[in-house]
Every structure is written in structure tokens, then in C-alpha cells.
Image (cartoon, rainbow, N blue to C red; front, side, top):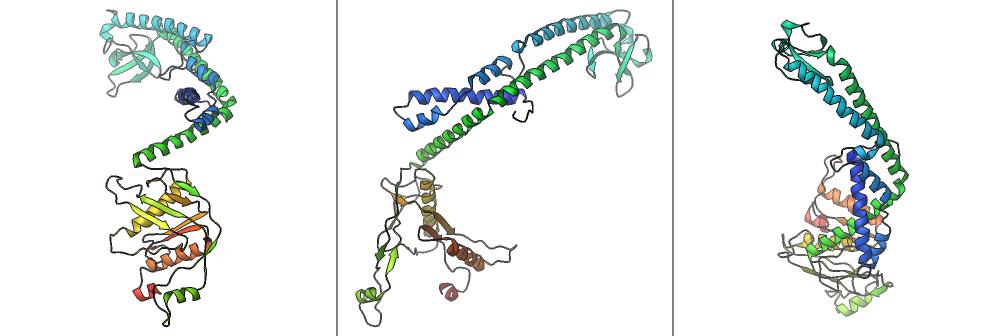
Length: 381
């Protein structure tokens, strides 16, 4: 509309429908302000542009027809058009039912060719009924002629049709200009409706997942973490080895997921997992047999973190806590590329190099089968 492209009735009806729903939603949310004040604030940003919706409703029917009431000129043209059509059809019916003309006609009917009313004349009686030939049948046995007796009536009817089309186009252009004038307001309303759609979609999804609201916690100040060593070094106790180990600065991140479930698995059958990273470590190695759920666990942590940071509830028990990470990186699955001549192993290495260049101590990094795709000893190294 802003580019002055005349909108068609279906487009205008879509605009009207959107504005009417915005009006209804605004009223509903205003009434629920005490229950949902934040949604009510969003609802207050809806501007239903009542003048536009009402004018479209006045001019266009629910079926997409431009109504007679759209303008006085259209009402007058259509009234004249009906009279002209009745006169034309009366004259043609009189011609086809005349006993004088019936022997020359293939059938006693009135039909249309090229937007003009014609009658079917048998080819061998060409000229018996004076008129203009508009078409002939595939076999050539029938000529479709416009009798001279109806030429002026046909012209009048056709002229009124064109006048009707012009007036409809003028009405649609006027409605389009009205929409264009209100375009910024309508666009703000549509954007607000999109926000509300997203909010309601998140709510429905949370309901279907039996999800809960996560507790988002800030990064704590970095602190020294001294994890214990599980083996003796040069005959020393693990306590002594831990004392000699270089201090590790814990970045202050928090991951505490209680009975977390992968969002794409059936919440009634999925096996939940607990993931807790305490203040003495911030890296976890997950081991176990094939099909034991290691990869799904990694994906669960990543997806739930992203869901939480996208304003979504997460499929986990109440009290689950997560930091807001500045970046989330993952190398999961087989990324072998024939196009780039990358093996599975080199593809993983390329991803890991990219992650090392991007990630810092406020990022979450998920690596699946680190060093896989090559000789086990080299992969371990």
C-alpha cells in the first residue's frame, strides 16, 4: 500500500481481520490487567486503527465483493447495469424463441463470446439473422453471432460493466491510500501481535512439556578451585599433589539442572538427568556405554540453556539454576564434508579450533566424543 500498489479485496479483508482481532485482544488484555500486567502493557501498544477496519467493512463483503454501498456512483451504475442486462436478455430471448428464427438456430439458447451475448446460428443459414460473427464451433457447423437488433443494448451493457470496473478500482485505490496513511500504526500493531504470538507459543510449549521457570543467576566473581587428584604422584598423597597442582580459576558460572529432560522426547517416558557443576570444578567428562545417553545429555544441557536465555520455561524440576552465558558452542555429531575434503576427524578439529578462537570463560562449550574419528591413541592425545 505504501508503494501505491492497489490492494485486492482479499488483502484488505486480511488487514481488517487483523485489526479486528487486535481490537478484541486489546479489550481482553485490558480487562485482565490485574492478573497479567505485563501482557496488559503490551496490549496497550495495540492500535486497532478503527477507521481503516470500519471503512473496509463498509465497502467489502466477507466474500470479497465490493458492496453497492461503497459509493453512490457504484450503486447507480449497478442499478443501470441490471436494467440494461434485463433489456438485453429480454430482446435476445425474444429472438431465440421466435418461430421465424428457430429453424436457423443450432439451439434456442443465449450464450457469451468475448464478453458479448450471442446466439448459435447454423452455418448454412449464415446471413439469415443479421449480426456480427464473434466465434464458431470446432466443427464449423455453428456460428456465434451478435444480432444487430441487440448491438446497441450489448454496447450499453458492456459500457456499464467497464464503468463498474473503473469505480471498483477507484474504491480499492481509496481504501489502499487509507491503509498507506495508517501503515506505520498498522505495522506496530502487527509487530506487537507477533510478540504476543511468541509469548503464547512459548506458554503452550511449556505447558505441553510440563516445564518450569528456570532461575537465571549472574556469574559469580572468579575464585580459586583446587580439584583433588585421583592418583598419587611420585609417592605423594593426593592432598599433597593437589597442593602442588597449579590453581584453577573457576569462572563463576552455574549449571544446576534438576531432573532435566530433552525437550523433543516424550516427557512421560524420557529418563531425566541431574547436572550439577559446583564451585570446585567447571568441566565435566561424561563416560559410559554406547546408547547410554551421553550425547542426549549434552544436547539437553545445551538446549535447556538456550531455552532459558530465550525466555522459555525448561523441562526440568523447580529450582533449576543457570548462568546467562555470552556464547554457547557445540561440536556434536558427524560433520564429514566431501565438498571441503574434510574427514570426520579433521572436521571435528576444525570446529574445535574455531571454538577455541571464539570462546572465553563466560561461554558454555559442549564437545561430543572429543578426538573421535581417528586412531584411539592419537585421538586420546
